Image (cartoon, rainbow, N blue to C red):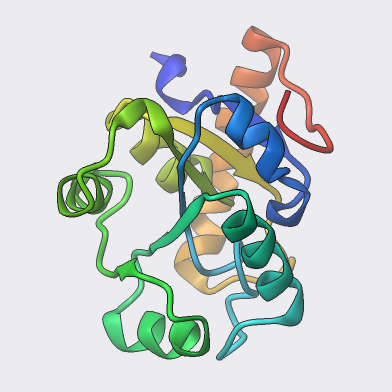
Length: 174
């Protein structure tokens, strides 16, 4: 039962994820949550740090796609200057949004990883879709009310899976 919440990797920040290590694991496409994963939830647009990380992914031949539960207008505005493909209203933890990207882009599940700051949406959606996942710490400590509630449940689930699977936060994927 708890296995559905277990991330493949746990990394301090999305910006610590090495494109070279992703390549070693056969990853060609990174699906990433938007709010508090790529940019703070209260930012309207991208950051220099995100642009730098995107450039390193691109240089390694790795594609980045945003998969967000947020509305299309918010996601489109946030990634407009980056020209990133995206899926909004992804319905995570259901695999709907991820499956949409897999089908649209003709992707092999073994070559895809989902990165996100929430166990109960991003990691669970990845596991529901049978792809690898990277759980990252949120970029900022504040959240909207629904996410605050989710984070309380997440703390409980994390305590259980940490104990069962001996999980630890790392600087990068193995």
